[in-house]
Image (tube, rainbow over the protein chains, first blue to last red):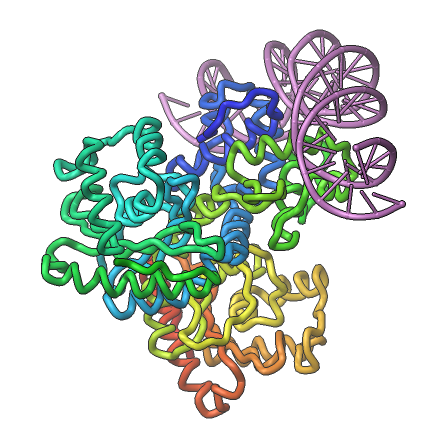
Length: 263
Length: 263
DNA sequence: GGTTCCGTTCGGTATTGCCGAACAGCGTTC
DNA sequence: GAACGCTGTTCGGCAATACCGAACGGAACC
């Protein structure tokens, strides 16, 4: 996913990084050299050289019997390091754990990336249900509680910009798909301090989120708790909202920020 | 850390990947272009092009005010994906959680990489103490319980090879530094099924580990629990060993392997 | 044994990534 | 205020180098 198609990038590096993404998106058994070369529309020899370089750096590894390429251990190493070096992720971890234990829900935090949420850490709930929630991806802001909590911290002007940029895609019949409806929800969020995603991203899935702030008073991101609709009756949501707001404030304090006063 | 200095690698890609490592090893505030160019012994313009490519792919990002380079969100994305795609890591997670909850210890699993342990997942204990335990790195096998548990599954011949390759570095006064002592410990591990690292890697830190097996009957890796020596009296260790062995067997079953019968 | 995939290696070509110089934006210092 | 040092950025020219295609060697399958 090359976000910006900036020219004057180094071609061989771009190719190598795209190749990593290709292997990551590939099947669990891995991909063969020929498959990769075909997909990359490049010669086998050139692809081979790139692959060897990536294998030498452990970005990829070869499967045990068949010569197939798989994700390598350097990716785990870099991900772990990046997570450990991210002040928001590392400072929030204990608070996320606490929230997950108290509520039994899956807890996530997102960074505020120019108004868009990027989830950077996740603590799965104890139940058998696992939510498909990839990390490190710039997500649409209007279909997650953390995203909406971040949106609510922006100016109305900036919200309109973002909506114009990326639209209001309907993930479910309950998704917010018009700007007036979104703004109405944003106003509610600004008053009560927490956001609710009631099956707006996935059917049967509810999540509640609140924003936290850095030492500049800027919105640094949002924390959210996710669960099944059947486990979260309406009357619980308000209570949970307050609880999540409290945990968001705890993160704000850890980041050295000022807790927002709500009227 | 380029493991093998294989020639005929793609230079610009190698440079780019080394550059990622450089930023990862750098300070939390990030590195400037000039600093990176100096360190890489390359011109600013060339380094700039490489950096831009990495930023476009989100491997790196720029710090908010000052133009400094920091780890990007793609690393978290790839690490999360790699972890999710690793069958050992994803199948073991629930078992690791259970073990951590029961014991209150930090639980880790390592893959068997040609006899060397590579830790791929970690669940921190509830306490305030955090152990510095990076993931995705080929570690020395003789200073961790998971490493020794994996070693015990190899032939004596292979163990000698590994010791010759990487030596027996002393991390603490209690580290095993001679082959006969290592072999004596290995024999004990083979009998009782679990390995103990009694302050052999770090002072005041104890860990206990056991191996698990894949459907070929090969040792796929090891699981270990880590805690402070003061929390783990000698008489507890045997009990804990049995407990960890049981959890290792649970992982073996999930991997479709056969549980080893011990005499 | 033939056929068809696979992965790997090897030179020739021209693409392309490198360098150094020059420019522009800040902050400090004199 | 102006000069300096440090940034990051851009541009053209040269040479290195990453590409390609062909050829080889091995495995699997018919």
